[in-house]
Length: 532
Image: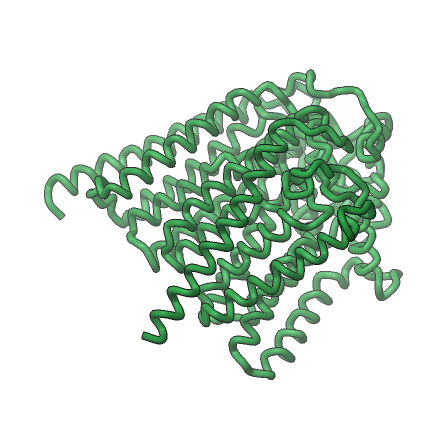
């Protein structure tokens, strides 16, 4: 390394360290001014939330100032588990984004997003023109400074952006889980699958400690925030294995500071980041030829969010590629054992089919063509239209099933023609984006894993078009999340058709068409190389 390279590496390392220190100080100052938010929902607020989830208009909470909440931190009165208001038949995927969202930081978030994507385009332009000559080294200081900066910036932002009603539901569930773990579903009335309840149990226990009670609302967002950081780290580690070190850092930065990722975990307080971490891990286990570990993680993902079933066929594709019957039986036993371990603590006194009933209730709760998902059905004006209504010869629901089958057949074809585990991430990207865009009853956040899966596919296949797709999906994910979170045209249970819906829905359709073309070209090129 010459003198110029050493000087550049030192400047870069110093910049990362400075960013880390500033983020750390910012988080300490922010937390020191935080005095706790309101306690768990009152009975009146729970009735209001029920009205929202049932599509009945409710008073707008957006005017409430959350910048530095100064509630009395009286969560302890509810943390005992005796006064927690149960929330019967409430789903976290209710699409009620605008209700309870703090709009104080709507404009700064939008400006940050514009700046982020302009910067991403600029950096990519430098790489494409090969004007990025300097290596930034292999220092662990840079890596941990980067990850620490992403973590502490998120922690610093939480007290300012406030809590959404969905985060408050998680807060209630965490309290119930901490005090009535095995009897959680009877006490909470939740329809959320059981895996994440283990995480909420830990959060509830920590939040009930005297020193942490005033931070209970903040703790709810910590698991998805940590998942953001861990996913970024995984992408870095894999990129270091297959790509240049400098590019590995850029991919990690691109994911960690991606506004589509930031808005979900930090602003909304949703858990899609944690779910995405499981999906990424499951796909990585396939590529590392650890299919039994993949089966364990896939089972946990399905028992966290039912939409993991969308990506589950990838494991089946790999089993077929391996052509060993023993693996089918081994995977089935592994999945069954994992499911039993997760479900057993909640199963006392319940029907053997209770988890199936729970899933059926959750999946069938919103029988609409689209539930604020900016996809094909929203594009043609079918947002919140009854899924049993007819479009051409079939109902929206039937068309959705047809598209699911078509998407799965195509991703299978890509996997077969690719003849390599390296196509697992690409096939998973096809599954999640294709089903989200062309199936019915999709919610606005179901596309979330696509941003990470596109980067993962790029790492394995090194096709620049996958970077374009990651950028495109990041934009569409952010747009869909942002406009639902901040209540664009009061979209809850609404058939309104704002321009944001049209533009983002069209973008998603075009991205899936482009993805199909990219995937087909990749396997065609692979076939030519293997037969040459």
